[in-house]
Image 1 (cartoon, one colour):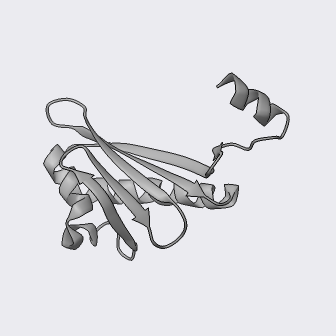
Image 2: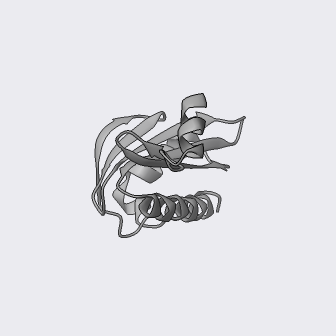
Length: 125
């Protein structure tokens, strides 16, 4: 962290920049089961309700724990993690990496924030 801060202060590294590109993350705590959160990512019919038009392929999935995605609409890899947050709530965290520019990272961070809010609306009905 000290090195990153030093490099950012001197203009050698921008916010969210990693050696393999830019990386952003977003998370949301949702009143839904881990199984429901996981299914919202892996079931194409359910996914269309909150992530319509997204082109990607799942490269690895561990039930109720994680989904690894090769993002098809643009560069990058997406890692989705699920965490228990109490008896009736769970957290989903999306980390989108290998983005080519700072502008792409900002767009994707906003995109995921909106999509996770839409997911919350679908699952908390």
